[in-house]
Image 1 (tube, rainbow, N blue to C red):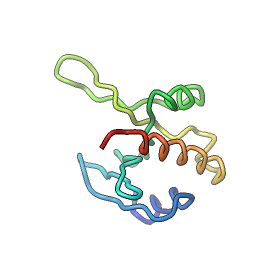
Image 2: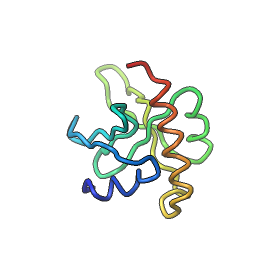
Image 3: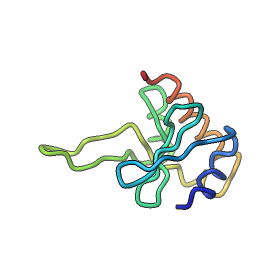
Length: 105
């Protein structure tokens, strides 16, 4: 996904910074990471407070194959209902930003 398309998705927050990482991109606002772009998909940060909302909306948690078992990361797909609705997307972006604010530096 190109950087302009990513910025459009996060317009409700204001300016975001995009940095290459892990073969994808990290998406930051005010110096805190709140999302990743992996293989063309945007994954939003979640935590113990917001992960149940992502799961209830049908989002899937990002996992990768670890040495002994799959490793679950605190990033979730964007719920389908938010992909074509900017107001709904802004809600999920705000949840990701809240998780980013609660995360330790």
